[in-house]
Length: 117
Length: 112
Image (cartoon, rainbow over all chains, first blue to last red):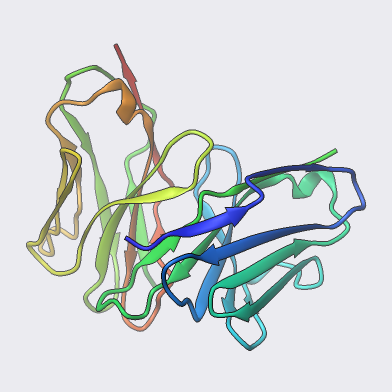
């Protein structure tokens, strides 16, 4: 299947700093990528849909100025957590949609563990 | 709207036991159904899928059959291993939406 990578896999930062997380589709072009957040022992919560060349679509309750998304190319989307605070600590997972497939399937990255001190 | 209901965990089994994790769904149209697995500290991996009624998805000894009449997609494995310990998510996508609807996940713990 298609491969999606995330970088970094783990990041620890101080409160007030900004953190950028990259999501790359390695062997296919992804016009659409998704960003999820996962709290311990819970399911994935969709944060936003990232479309190449246009503004991201945020889910209700997600602050777009807090979680900046840039999808500048067909293989890269970035999520920047601005002015991070301890409550932003979480596991962030991206996924990419392969539209060449006949069915709707997303390919998930391995996740990024963010810890804000 | 779409929804997925999974049995609550954790499910605790001994090695070589039979596994069933129930999943039922509600959806508009004809959804595609998925099982994802998440190992500790990792992202989600697609375990298996079925795109139409009566299809059986299978992978690594796991199986699930798309049952439209009962709107179910139960995950089964005949003999679990310790390495199967993980969280399993049932999901669906339907219509024009590419965004899957996930169940809450079921934690599986397999003891030697």
